[in-house]
Image (cartoon, rainbow, N blue to C red; front, side, top):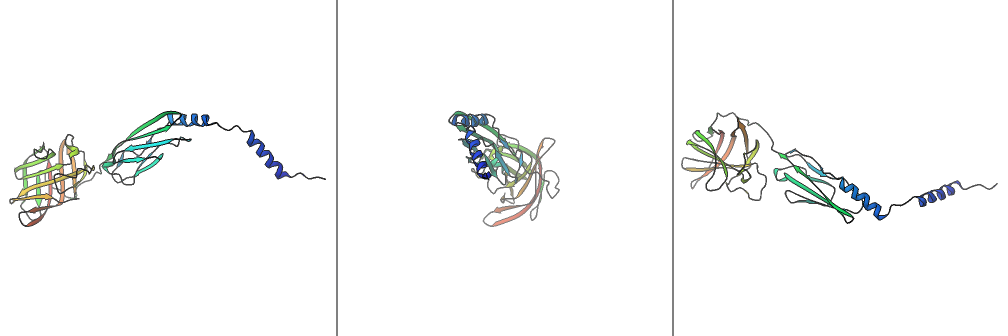
Length: 258
């Protein structure tokens, strides 16, 4: 009796069925890609707090396609899925755009705004309103605390004075805006860094004993509002002074607009 080769028959049938299945043409593939493109939407992590990751993605549309991304802080990519950053900073805030192109159909463009929120916090010291306490200098009180634009730098300033004086300069970003609540860090010059787009920065200065004092860098300042009034608080803030000899002092204060 002649035996059939079962495996051979199975393979032959598989080849026959596969050969009978209709293959998509290039035009059909392009049509599917174009349809996918028109339904494309960005998904992103927003809002996000400083220090958290930012992911920004669109679906894979298939076929021949070109992705082009651009956004804040010189962001650019040609991939559908992107980790913008592992640690968000304010310089990553803003509009992100993607365009997807295929020669067979119109370009698809979508955008999303990534909102990077300031970290919130409470100062570890309690100081009475409109007072500054120093580690090795006499303390100060202020009768007037006002918001203004500084005449020499054109920066937004919280100006505390009479009889003492202290000025808090804000990053140029805030020149025409009310500062948001959150944790800011200090710089050591009122010119700031013009290429640093992390705008949660402040500069503090005072004149005491005929010495000009200025904040040292990378210290914490707490910005908030009380009944709509701007408040600046800080604890053990190191300040430097110079009159031919270098000095340092530690300042804790609470400046509240009145």
